[in-house]
Image (cartoon, rainbow, N blue to C red; front, side, top):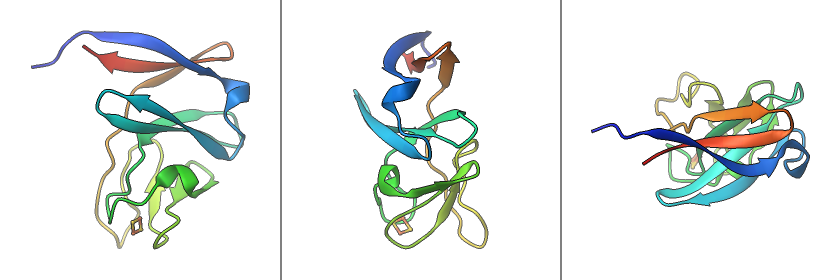
Length: 107
Ligand code: FES
């Protein structure tokens, strides 16, 4: 059953390096907040759909991240692995309010 979505402040934009990420601990595991070159933010589980590699330590390029373990490329907006690889990472709603990053938490 879906619960209520509430927005939780997790970091300021400046706390996340451009083309980098910051890990936020949540009740259902670590979520990586990614910041792209154009200052978009995305939030995905910090677990690669291949073998659980830490996506937060991957290389961000465009709106994608390359996993540090075996180089799968994950689309930050959809969480989908780029072909020919198949897999999907769970996304968390994320929202920028000025320079405040808010994570959508379902409770
Ligand atoms: S664990 Fe990410 S590509 Fe293998």
